Image (cartoon, rainbow, N blue to C red; front, side, top):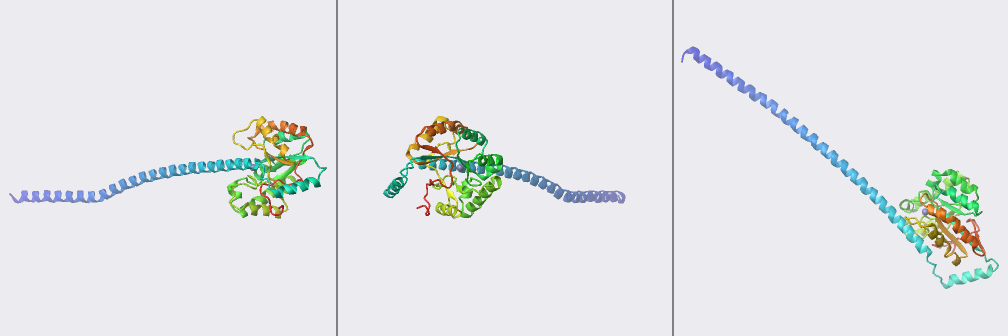
Length: 323
Ligand SMILES: [Zn+2]
């Protein structure tokens, strides 16, 4: 090999070596970059998946919560219907009661009048106007136990109840059992709200109360005796009922059935408080009303009256003061 060709060979080798080093350096730089890009893409894809799964989970959770709420409502309404059924069973007649009743009868021998009180719960509603017109037509006064939320929804109708001479009573602000019966504090907070809403709307401070589900309800987590005592301490009397129209059931009863429920046991009571409902879903109650009034008017010595301070209380749970 000549000196010249040897030089050529070395030059080529150096060139090749240089290229190899450059390629290696290039690869050393590019590979981590490529790897990083790939990892970032993967991460992004996983993030998207996670977001989707979270959204699905949240949607599922909402559905479950909705179902739970509906279930709670169903249970509460079933319990209310059950309590009303219980209330229809004639009260146990122990000797003590008989004695006091006999004494009462002798005392008021001349007073043979049967007093019937029509009471409408849960209003005012879209049907209150029609109920008021029917009552006017028969010149009958009734009692409306209204809720705060409904008064706020229909303030004019609430004023109309008072304007047309009917009695107005409290039936809680929210009517949400799980809230008002959770604790005594909750109950008091709700009580003050409904009292003030009625007073501000109508100018009348109500002095009668009906517990949602009645004073003997089995849903309350607070001792009902304590709540009854509180109410009475406020100078307010609470009224339950001894006759239920049965119109609280989820599927509407026929007007005939409601009328029958109201009239069939009136004969058992000298002081009959009839439970009816005034809500946007109880149209058959409105349809039954004329028949109920006509049936009661046809009964001998029977008066239909609004609840006033003279009305004898009808209570499922007797308060200590009354006993
Ligand atoms: Zn109610």
